[in-house]
Image (tube, rainbow, N blue to C red):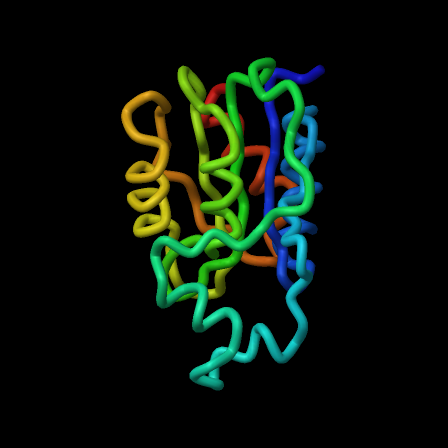
Length: 160
């Protein structure tokens, strides 16, 4: 088992693409965070006040049920955590993942796929969930078109 894990949630496939490239660059295991009830296009329509994504993100305590979990989390030292940015932070399903696993002594490196919004607010929110038992790095915004070479250079700078 690799000591590095890439865990990600992808609503449209953009984050999945970046996560796969990151896992390859780091020779890491990869885990897709999947909601038990998959999101439909209607669920993701942020222009509708009562869409599922709007309702979930309006309630900070919302934890959509997740399909599956990681066995053997204790074997990982570093967890790259990927997601699209929703309302300035990680989607609630990512919070479900964080609550479902034990991160004591681990380093979490968030990365988001966003055209504009950075990962800073999400990193801060992730810290509030996992507490001081884990180190949460600042992370990085990577566009869906992030080049493999850019990902490699970033991970080399991190030194994991």
